[in-house]
Length: 624
Image (spheres, rainbow, N blue to C red):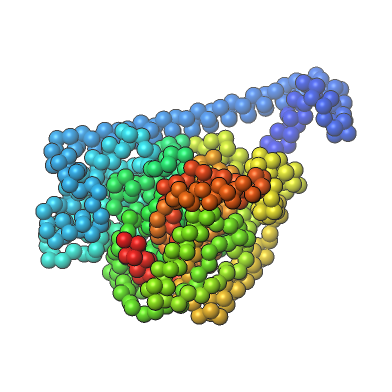
């Protein structure tokens, strides 16, 4: 390692010398600070015929350029091979299904059924097999691929084998293994399945077929479920939309100009397009819940260590105070309850010995609860009028159910976001892994620039921050607060202390008010425009990120949509807000928001997952 370090240091010295040589050769020193380059120019002038200047530097520069081009060529070849392999797998599945009439006949019969309806046909009536269901979903997936929806990363080729095993198990028993028996499931493309290429949407991970199922996949199969698809995801965290070079950009099902959320947006779209009955994502920065809000599906982040996240290959380790949590998405709360009941059964929990043996028991309680209620987090960004109206309706429903509502205001709601940004701003892992080691992989120039922000020297961040504020079109106090977190590096000890203090303050509030649950907005607005600034998305993300830092379970439930009157009220408010403020930008986006889904977030203390889902079920029933 010492020799390697010496060579790396020597390469940097020669790079710097070559840079100075180029500056002198093209008279660039005239345009730079003479105090720096004049002495250098003098040296090169007296050493024109020296080996270093006439041969060494040009050879070094040429070698560097050739190496860079060679690495780019290798990346391009890998991308081409991966795309070719995807086409081959799709053709093989198509050929396999072509000779079978049953899957095509079953598409209309199966596609669009909810989990309980599908289970009724497979388990109770037994008029259709799990294999029939899987093949029908594969036909539908091929149709979506031809429509270029960009939601599907991989169709799992051996899903039919898992389906046959599920049918055999069902034929031997009078009852199913779990409520998930025979149910097709889609997974985000960072959850590894044996024999599949789980790339995380990164080219350099292509051709790395998983040698074994990760524990959450093993748990699904143990419960009788059948993984059928891997979904597209963004290769970087905290992204507005689901987009990758490998699979394309996912578009919102009803509003193409709106974002779907970064990592789990494709999972939500697959549910809406009836390509899956259940989706599993990974919620680290609020990802699953943000996608659920934007697309109008149910998303639930359990308590960490409730479901296994072991063996899930993360591209880069997340902040130490944010745990990646495997989180389900579905079209209704009952499906989420079925997931938790199946994957938290005593027999399934034994697959991962690190999980506590704490089975999930669905609640059907008539107990009256004390529920904390908040309508906005103005320290982040206020909610738009459509969200305010939705919350008023939810409060009325909660009170009509007989529960006690207590007005609360979460302490310092901007603190989790600022701590997260401060950590990410000091962590150049994405820059080193994706850009330096893998030549930018499949990232766009904008994403490469985002990776570079964490590698920018702190002495340059003030000037660059000022330029970025101009580019983002915002100069309000909220913007300055975000950039201040990027400009200043916090020691790990200070981060740990602030995280601990925030958790203590929040728990103090919870205990003082004697809360059972907490309900508030899942986001300050419906789905953002795809052209939204990164700063606006960060503020939006802050509404979910709080409960990742606290490690509180939280669920998102869609309740209604934006109406024409909401748009009219917002237009009047937008005319009074400065255009260079983030809130002003958010209000102006609502002009075309009619019909977008709205949602609320239900939060509980750790291990109160059953209580959260019970209240979500009560709210869902009242909505219908």
